[in-house]
Image (cartoon, rainbow, N blue to C red; front, side, top):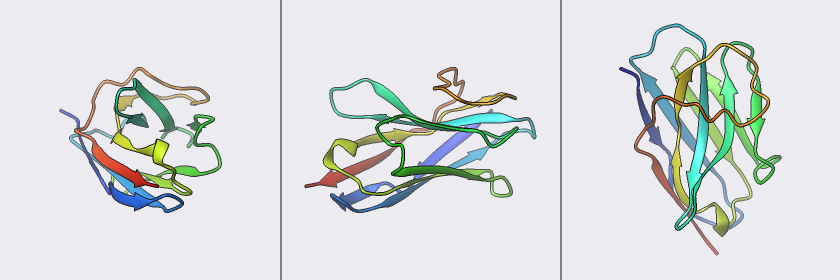
Length: 125
């Protein structure tokens, strides 16, 4: 069973940065798609970014393009989300879902099979 643990959330002032981590366990060596979603209070869960292991392709939502960077460390089985220039609208719970997938990611993936418990990010004004 694939398990995902998000970490790195916390309280930061507007304009600040955070780096989130998503550690996966219970996986095999198959290619995969891992994403980052945000669920803001009272809003639907939004896919911010995703990365495909087969070719390193990435997708970013327009709302985070240029400020957030997704990356992976295959040796550690961990995916990161570097978030810069944060604003209060970034407040929410951040999740990193997973699915075995071999292909190029150019759009929101949305077909994830496993989810972590999330990590809270709060951006103060």
